[in-house]
Length: 302
Image 1 (cartoon, helix red, strand yellow):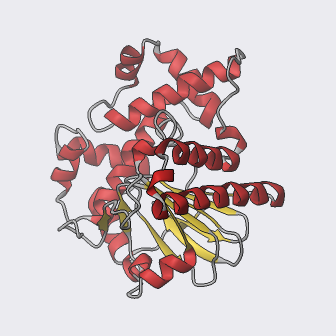
Image 2 (cartoon, helix red, strand yellow; image 1 turned 180 degrees about the vertical axis):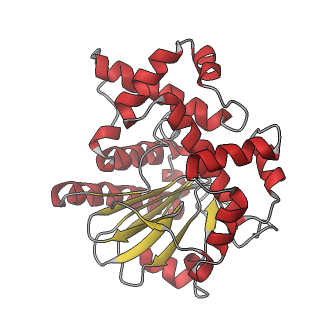
C-alpha cells in the first residue's frame, strides 16, 4: 500500500492462510517466487519484523540509507518502521522469518538498536541454522496440524534463534548479574526503549531522566558505555533518522515534517537538521531525490 506521498511502500503484516500465529517462516526462494514483479527491490517500510540468515550465496541489501553486502553468515534484522529494500538476492539462500512486534514481548523493543546487518562466524551460523530449522518444523506442524499449534512455543523458539545470532554486545546479560556493566546496559535499554516511544515529543534528555527515575548523568554514562556517544547525541540521531526518512520517502513539506517530529516551527527543525548534517532539509531532499535511482545509500558495515 502506497503512503500517498512518495515512493516508499508501507507493508502490513498479512500472514499466509493457516499461519495466524504472529510468526511465519519462509526462505529466499519462496520470497522470489511470490514476488514475480520484483517489488522487493523498491523501498518499503514494514510494520513487522523481518529476520533473515544467509546460509549460502551473495547479494546486497539496503536499510535506512546504508548498503550491506550479503554473504554466507550474514544476519539481517529489519524492525518495524525501517525503510529497506532487497536490492539483489537472486543468489541468496536461507531462512526468512516474519513476525509481529508482540511475538517477543519484553525482548524485541529493548533490542531495537541492533544493527540491520551483521556477520556470524561458521560455528554460530551452523547453530543459528539449526535453530531456524527447528522453528520452521514447528511452524509447519502448527499450520498443517492446528491441534499441535503452540504460539508460546513458536515465540520461545524465535527468541532462541535471535539470541543465538545477536551480536555479542547486544546479547542480554545473564540473569542475576550485578556488574556495573550490566547495570549500564539495563539503564541504556530502558532509555533506548523510551526514546523509541517518545522521540517525536521529547527532545531533551531531562524528560527521559524524569520519566525513568534517573538523573541525566546516569543516562549519559549508560549510553556512552553502550554506544560510545552521549544520551543527547543518541536522541538527536534518532530524530535525525526519522527526519531523513520523511524527507526522502514522502513529499511532505518541511513544515509538516517538523510538526511530525515535534518541532514548534520549520525554522527550529531546519536549524536542527543543518546542525546535524551541515545541509538544509530542502537541499538534502533535492540531492537525495536526484541521485541515481532515487535511492543511493552510503556503504555500511556488514
